Image (cartoon, rainbow, N blue to C red):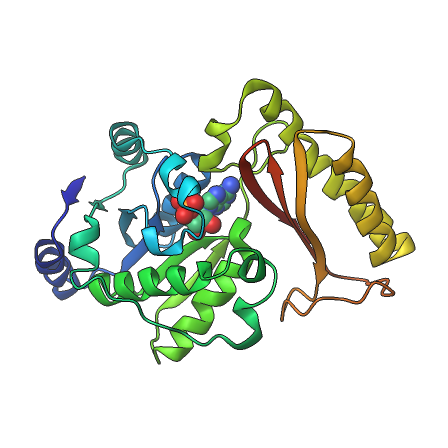
Length: 278
Ligand code: AMP
């Protein structure tokens, strides 16, 4: 695996590969890699791409400074995981390399960045769009792979591609889970043992709410989630919402949908976890 930290160097290499007719598949990450990330690499490989993974803890997408400071950083372990997975290229730029003039761009995604994660993490999606745009301009991938765990992020990236009038293909990949159902996340390693046990209730609560949703509707599902979360002093529900999966429009409490997407954000101790279920 080739490792680059400089934009000019990775660009020179990728230009060469493009001229050889290779298609470039890009997987942006913030490191502290787990099998969820590796599943995106595998998807890029299966679809015949030269795989380029980036590791960059993007400061502009953190609305909470403590979260940025706490964010796990395990570059050596990440590098060997990517080597074993057969990733072709790893790009690990510094903050100065990515944002030489400390620039800040403002995007308008309409309602999409004002609901759910956008509402609860002000400025988060602006930072995500900023870094993804910068990466897309540097790497110029044919295809980029994202996880559905960050469902709203995938929609923001698709909207960004439209804004950029780009033809980069965006592939959304399924959520990988731990054996007990907890969605894999870099933040899981920050959970204390007792918190980790409690976090496993998140997918259980979501699955129960799904049954209630189809039988009794949105309000009853929400009530179930609120009641379950309040049973654990370590858990603090940030939101649980039920949406149209195509538009992310929130469904009213009175709805009893046939198909819907439920999204949750919940603190377990200090650690904020998200998950979603169709
Ligand atoms: P992150 O390093 O958290 O920014 O994530 C990098 C990419 O990996 C994003 O597209 C995430 O949606 C994706 N990802 C994170 N966790 C998972 C998971 N459990 N399953 C699948 N993809 C994931």
